[in-house]
Length: 425
Image (tube, rainbow, N blue to C red; front, side, top):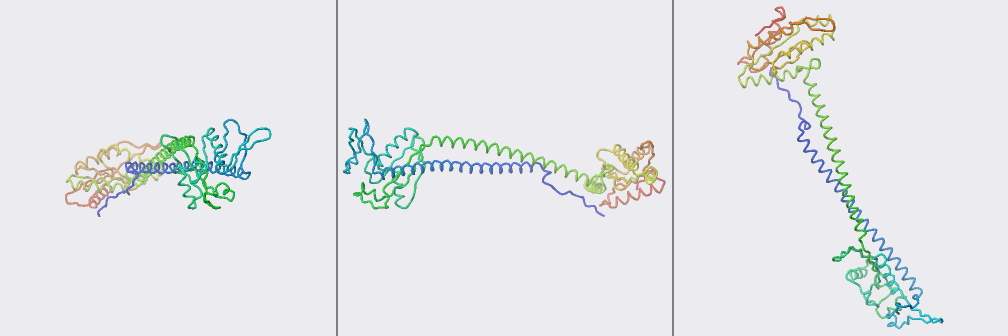
């Protein structure tokens, strides 16, 4: 019979270098995922901040439009002509007298909707930097001629667009938000623009809003910093937690697997190798001895009259005796001798590089160690002897089966000849 060496299943957890590489890759993936999430949040936050400015511009445009309509519906608003208040020269060119003399001698001058918007814009720019104006391709006031962005917007409105906006960064100046909303010709508009070729419903111009963005940029930078710190903190916590927990889990799994392997290869009572593991080691040592041409001895050991010990003292005491026998034999063997329990009261010793004579000497030493002093079991002292059968590998043997058979036969002869002895075959 040829014994096939037993191999335990491989496990990646046994190779902690592979696990460490896996954890590094996992941490890199988690970090990338967290960074991607926070990058999305940053982009989304920036979009929301721009949207907030746009809503502010829309509110300004609506307010200006309502104010303009209010002015227009009243045919203009008169203000007292004080120092610094000039008459609207553009109304004079249209044949409209802007000034009105009151009975008390005070003079009032008309402010139409365009001029009113212009003056309110100057006040707004002084207070908070926000500028707005009415622009047109055919302006009555040349100052209302569109710039490049406003010209693009007027062209887009002619094509059906309803608004236009973008963030502008003039060279050397703070960024600003530009917004444009169209103005359409109404019937009353033709009173002043009748010679310009407009028809009701045409795009006559646009309300242009310019909002400076230093505060928004500061908020964006603060948001970027907060998100960056949050990304570093969150990814750091997740990575450390993942690394630590996974590593701890791996250690526990490895420890559990080692325990399972130990349980699968170890005799629970004595702590020695069990039969399966002992046979595996025998096959390994036999192949090595055969390959190198070295001697190998096999000792089969049986505790004499062990059933009587169990019957007289009980199985707990019998188990204690077996454990003590294992300890004594282990202490008497060399460090590279292999001792295992292969049956109830049967043991096996595999002695590499030991020939027949050396095997007999080793067996006698073991027999003397066991029988030389009684074993203490509670208040009882129990004398124990062992019988040993020895077989040494011959050059003709090519498998462990015949070596085992000869060792077993030698053990049976030792027992037949009266026990407490060594027999070699």
